[in-house]
Length: 218
Length: 218
DNA sequence: GCGAATGTAAGTCAGGTGCTTGACTTAGCT
DNA sequence: AGCTAAGTCAAGCACCTGACTTACATTCGC
Image 1 (tube, rainbow over the protein chains, first blue to last red):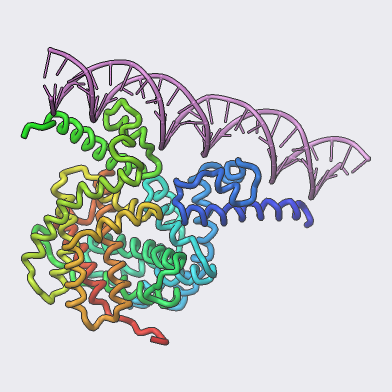
Image 2 (image 1 turned 30 degrees about the vertical axis):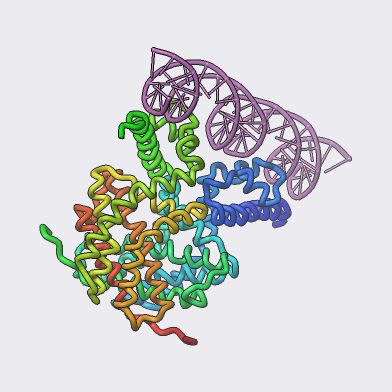
């Protein structure tokens, strides 16, 4: 089984260097403020068409970056999910939502760029769709969503959807803000990703359990 | 006092049409995905340099769009602020944070683009600073922040900062998501901006009042 | 009224973009 | 050993961008 090992190794390394460079540049300067050329150069590829060759369009590159991280996040989530069984404590399910991601950021070492990258992709009208597709492809994530539904049977479906969206917004943008603060050497409220996860989970639980103010006509 | 009235009128109309076109295009396609040329053309200005002539760089244009709306939001907030006096109910202060903005979106009629525009500006590493500057220039906003501090004296300063940031994220991105859903004719959890404000305020209050999980070493 | 001033229109320009093309290099097969 | 296939590289393409220049139309101070 020595078929093409060296070659495949090189290709893989080139792809990896492009992904890493792109993730960094996108996070720091904005996805659309960085050209494929700049990505290729930053990745040490003299070829200005390296991105196009290996990935295609910028959207495809973005998708590849997401997938690269998703596997690790998925692992973390599956592990956590196994530990809580069929708990009916909202906190357990929130942890399954929050911790896998922040754990992953912690594992990446320092500095990281993935959180800022995700925040931008989620906010861009053209790229958002990609992120949503890739996220919903995770079976464990669907499982967590069902867990919430079981935990909060009394919450009206509309409010459940509304608060789910809010939780998602926080989970995307709060880590991004912390990551940016770390990059700029600005003090952060929490000293580690682990503690930040605790603070974020506190807030998300607060959202889910907040009283629902009735509105006229419902 | 008829000095330059007609001329000034024209200039004002041109500026306004550029601002409106830019806000719309930026919201729909992304700030950096739209060139100044496209903005000029969409504004009905044959001159491809109209944006540069009237505003300067793209960052200056973004700032002008923000300022155009800020005055109305400020009015709403001042009015609301006058009604609550020195209340110690967190809900009152959250309303002062949330309602002025969503009221403004309601006043704009339908469709709107401002919420999506703001979400993008806040997420872009280069433009974020502009938004922060313009926002903090509002005296009433500072007043609201002080109100929170008075309401929640027992909350550790770190947690207060953390949750303030979270509230900000929600206030920016939740309206943007609703606006997008409206634009795409997707059903929304709430039938009006007013009700959406209630739902958002519920969640933000939930964040502020959530129990703080102690972490080791603090 | 009339010239100066000013906003608009239109065209030009250098630089940068994504994409394509073709030559070069190298691994792996026969 | 030589051939094939695939990754890399360099150059060129048409297009678009922001910035600049020039010509035109309208308004306002005199």
